[in-house]
Image 1 (cartoon, rainbow, N blue to C red):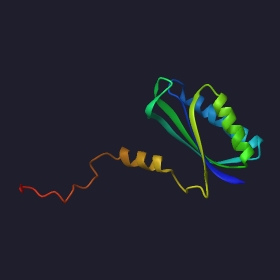
Image 2 (tube, rainbow, N blue to C red):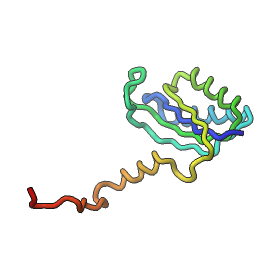
Image 3 (tube, one colour):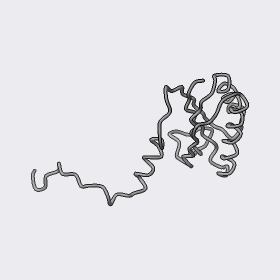
Image 4 (tube, rainbow, N blue to C red):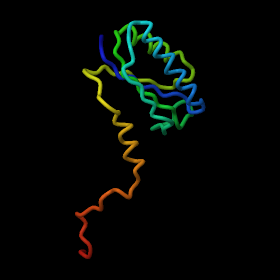
Length: 128
C-alpha cells in the first residue's frame, strides 16, 4: 500500500462536530476499501488565502493515510460530492512525518507570544 497525506477544507459555517463527522465518514470509506488512517489532525478554523465560493475561512483537517490507490480514488470521489467540503488535496509521500505537522508546530510557537523572542543584536543604535 502507498502512503498519502490528505488535507481537506470544510465550510466555515458548519460546527466542529460536523467536521469530525466528515472525518469519520472519510475514515470509514478508507477502511471499507482496505486502507487505514495513521493520524488525524484538526488544524481548526483558518483564513483562506483567497475566497472560495464566497468563503473567507475554512475548517482544515489533515489525514495521514496508508491505503491502495483505489481507496484514495473513492475518498476523492466522495469529497467532490460532499457539499460541506470546499477543497481537498492528496499528496503521495515516501514516509509520514513523525509527531505534529508543521502547521501545528507553528501554531504552538505563535501561541507563546512575543515575550520569549530574543531581541535582534544586529541593529546598532546611534549610527546614521
